[in-house]
Image 1 (spheres, rainbow, N blue to C red):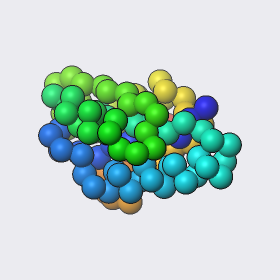
Image 2 (image 1 turned 90 degrees about the horizontal axis):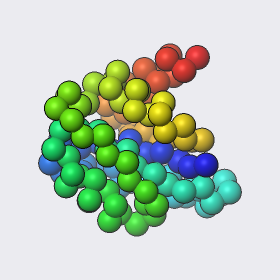
Image 3 (image 1 turned 30 degrees about the vertical axis):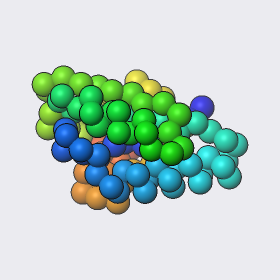
Image 4 (image 1 turned 60 degrees about the vertical axis):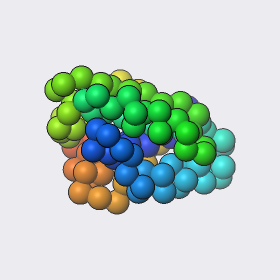
Length: 110
């Protein structure tokens, strides 16, 4: 099982808050059974963001969903990708994007 961190970015650069969230996921992992920390990057032409995510300490795996229709990173697109990964735990950034994604995921998984 794993902890999934949803990367927040602008399709070019990883936002610093994502690194903090990965660190939080790593700490949860240490206390909760050494789960792997996975990062999901959703966007358009976001390969550089995925590569930057892979370089962050504590990341075991990066998933990239890269397509023109992911460029806006809508909550619906994020939810569809997250459901496919079936992670045990999720860490969201303390941002509007993280809040909207967590809210959409919570309501669609009930």
